[in-house]
Amino acid sequence: MLVIRLSRQGRKNLAHYKLLVQEKTNPVKSGKYIEIVGHYDPNDAENKLTFDKDRIEHFLKNGAQPSDTVARLLKKAGIENAAKFIKKYTHQVNEEKLKAEQEAKDAAAAEAKAKKDAEVAEKEAAAAAEKEAAEAAVAEEKTEDASTDDAAPAAEEAPAKEEEPAAEAAAEETPAEKPAE
Image 1 (cartoon, rainbow, N blue to C red):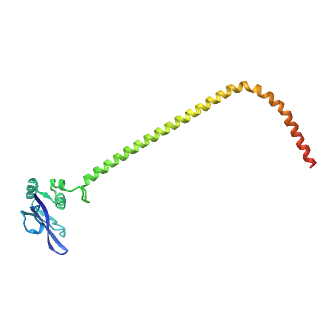
Image 2 (cartoon, one colour):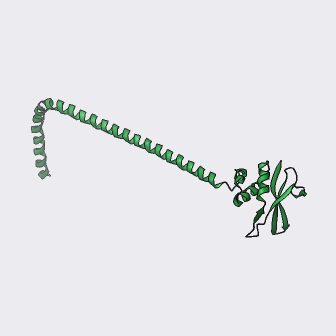
Image 3 (cartoon, rainbow, N blue to C red):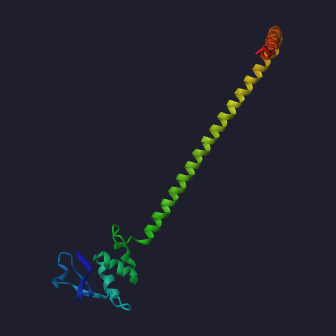
């Protein structure tokens, strides 16, 4: 299997890289490569990546796999097919996938909130129904008490009149005792 990878060149703290097409089993520094398809210089602000677009596209069409770093560099440079070679598990995840994931999370959160609001509304409606039922039961009891109270007052008034003179006599005796003290 062919791979397109970077091979480090240069001295300490001033590195530049060759874009090599080589067999995957060959070590990067072995010197055995099929073709040099470009150069990458991270220290040069203007010409960071120079490559032969036609040759890279040719190798990609014929099954060569770019490394993750090379795929990112090629994507920035405008190679259309390079985005599919970027690995998902790396720290620099594709922005489109992040955006889609965020939209999915937002939609799920909105759905959960709507479901929670519906449950709260149901609970409030149930509580209101229970309150109305309790108030109706209390009103029924009052109407039942009122209907039974209409017959009872005549019977209750007679014994109350008998108790009143005894209460008055007790009240009269208490003030008389106070001055005697």
